[in-house]
Length: 354
Ligand SMILES: C[S@@+](CC[C@H](N)C(=O)[O-])C[C@H]1O[C@@H](n2cnc3c(N)ncnc32)[C@H](O)[C@@H]1O
Image (cartoon, rainbow, N blue to C red; front, side):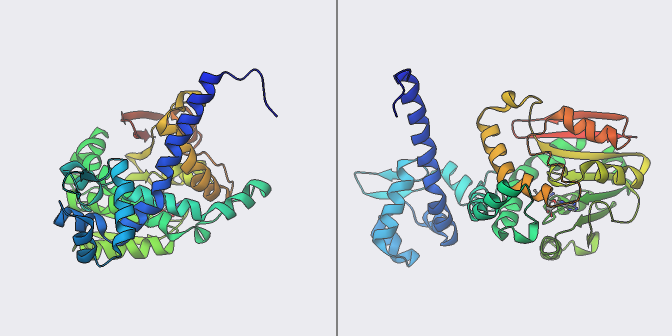
């Protein structure tokens, strides 16, 4: 069937866009291979190097490695010197792919993407039934990848840029305030808060047992296990009262965000605040139709909507809910003073008070 109303220019533009997206998506398995075989770190140590020597040092087959190197050079993730037939990583490529602890690392994104491809069958069923996909059925890569993906941004922003925007936060925490990180996942944010405010009482709650086990392990490795109390708990069942209750990149994942916010309201000391970190979004969907929206709506279709629908209420806010919907959730929970205190291209920070 051919449509005579086709605008050939528009068609070509669409096809070119698809080619670009397909080329980017084709890298997903290659990035996972490089990550798991430690090829980025090896190239960082050894480069500039030809593929034969690199293969010997990395103990992998040269032909596979060479094709991998060509693919990554074609997209400028690896640098290639054609005259010498040598491969290397520039300082920027090293920072993004090889420096695991650095603030520019982005490898976690590929881990999340691989986990989402794995979820395909389950989400197809969910599309047909409207049911959710519970965390216990999600690919473990989604959890490890999420923690790894968020870590660099938390390292750069959380303590130095975001939390100082919460009125009185630093002062109160330095004087021994209490902080609960609800939906803490692997607890990287919890650990950063505990390390930055040694006088404060810091708690991490998540209903996903493997995440809490991992959070405890990471705190232990960092020598901070005494400073943080982790517990397996739903957002509507943890105990205690706190000066600050945080929902970092998780309120929209919850089935009952209003119930979770109401519960936090009741657990909050009178002059305390709930702190949300959420993906940056505008209120109207069409205002999110850009590369960030493409990424977040996609993550949300495969992850945030299915997990929210698997829980009680199943509100399914989605990762691009936008400020108005989030503030409505907080106001329904009883909060009176809700506002965005910081926003960058990927995240926004909201503060809610009684
Ligand atoms: C996208 S992850 C974010 C984890 C962590 N806050 C971070 O920023 O890395 C969402 C987390 O929310 C947790 N979660 C979702 N619904 C929950 C609920 N109802 N009660 C407690 N935790 C929940 C999940 O187990 C998961 O660890």
